[in-house]
Length: 178
Image (cartoon, rainbow, N blue to C red; front, side):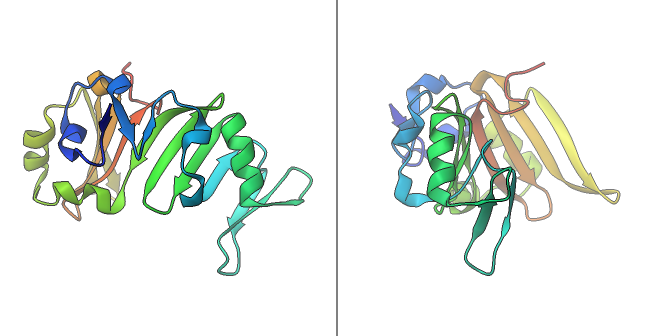
């Protein structure tokens, strides 16, 4: 098993067998309960009908009856069913039927690619994507969403900050091709 946080060059491979990688010790397909609970700072699950930021205490969750839910209650539901777990260390896990089906990496973990100064440098490092979507706002090019179907991977290039801002693997929209 290749730990992608210890071997960040793996993140750039356009072809990758996802059965061979783990993120923070958690493999795709592993039970969601394997995600280190102490690092989870937010979660989403179908038990949550409404959520929002509180008074500086973090995310607040409410069920369909308007009753408050604790983070632990939301995490407990997500790891048994479907949802997402968001960790303080800028790692996220997508959960389906109690199993980890996707990883997302953002923030300082992507500093390995800080030397990439342009979209052309990005393409040289990551290879030609199978699909590219331009991200525009008010007529300005903001970046690119690139998809590598051989790795079931999505990489977001931020053209304003000239950096890779997100990499996700696994069961996310667009990662498997048309």
